[in-house]
Amino acid sequence: MKSLRKRLPVLFTVMLLPVLLFSAITLWVTARDMRERVLEANRSALSYYVQELDTTLSLLEDYLLNFAVNDNSVSKLHSADTNARAIAKAEVFERLRFEYEIYGADCIFFYCPSTDCYITVYSSALNYQDARELREMVTGGYEDYLTDHRWKAGRLAGDAYLYQIVETAVNGPLVYGALIDIAAVQERLSASPETAIYMTGPDGQALVGAGTLREEGIALDPGRDGYTDGRRNWMVIQESSPNGFILWETFPQGPFLGSGSTFPLLLGLSAIMLLVLAGAILLIRRWVLRPLSGLEKGIRELSAGNLNYQISPYGVPEEYARVNSAFNQMTGQIRDLKIQVYEEKLRQQQAELNFLYMQMRPHFFLNALTTIVNFGKLKQYENMYQFIGYLGRYIRYSLRRHASNVPLREEVAHIENYLDMVGLQSPGSVMLMADIQEEAQGCRVLPFSVYTFVENSVKHALSPGRMMSVFLSARVEGGTLAVTVEDDGAGFTEEALAKFRDPAWIESPDGQHIGIRNIIRSLSLMYGEEASVTLSNAVPSGARVELRLPAEREPAGSEYQEEGKP
Image (tube, rainbow, N blue to C red; front, top):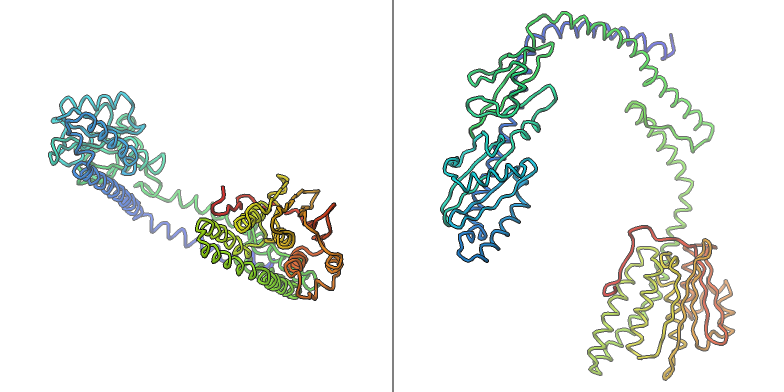
């Protein structure tokens, strides 16, 4: 008996037997007042339903009154101008169409007797025939149906409704009203198939569901409350509303609500609890002993050095789930200690990337500011405004470096924006010819990785009186993105090419070609050996740069559009 697996079932059995006896005594004592408790709970719910309906009716009434008195379009329904009246009618209809369901109405109408203008909106609770009958009733003699700012439950236009019809003369004679389908209200408030809600007027005559009441032999008596009626001993309670209607609830009596003895129920409950005892022993094995075995196995695996072993925190009691989660966190923390050196290296690489980026940009912004000043001195204000717009997009793109890689299409758009700036400084001096494969446009690249080589070509190949060409192409070859930049200038010197191929120059630059060096270094930090940059001279002349990067597609929904670009 030292094992917990044997002690727990015995302990549970000893504890359950007194609980069984106590439950039987408690049930016997509480059965006497259960009837009033259930009735009180149902009365509270019914009272809440009435308050909810009263609030809805009050809001709807205030809405209608405010609409009728303060809306300019409603006042124009009295206009003698046919066109003005037609426009006002359309405006009132559109507003009602969008707002009537918000206030819980199934139908709202406005009628101007002086111009015979009738407007109505209604839900599917009214069919076309009912709506037509309502119009004929209102336009043919509404005086008999006025409710004097009160709500009435009754039959109107063929069906049972809770309705209000009011006449006002603030801006001229106007009749307005609203209908709420009683059948829909009763269906919404009925909590279960066995429980039924009925709405009646002060006389207690059911307008919807009268046939069901007759079948069950239930009479709704406004003079009584909390009584039993019908062939199946239904409980009947009521709650009156100051708006002139009564809500009734009927529900069957359960074992505790009847006046008979509860002894058969006690016997049944005792038998059930004995069966529960047998099931509880099985549950102990599943909820206590089996998770305990899993925890023991995890400890053995951890002792053996298996740091990847995890205990599932699901499908076990909350206490075991917390213990299992703590175990998993502990093993995870141990694993984390092993990769801290690697993470520190990544942080150092990111810091170096940011430093490399900051080295690449200052000279450009200084030159751009000088260009703006020169445009101003020459009074070329249109060019100055365009240049400032291009510069704004340039800066906006520059600030996105912290967003990691960007789609190639955005890098190309940035290149085009830069060449537009060059075109303002030297009109007709640069022509870009781009051939970008559709699949390659969505591949992600390091910001400024392609731009830097285009800028380098413009810087070294552009000469006065001669148009230079820049050729840009991109293809996806297997899992690799191949980007090529060429120009028709003089190309690289042999000394420069030898320097570019020397790994020592990448690690210890000599102060020249900082942009190229920084891009090569950045790509190395970002992709490692998966990225390569090849610099050579094109045939017959010009510089050629080929970048080969992993073809990483942009995630769905990440497209970015430059300001001012289509």
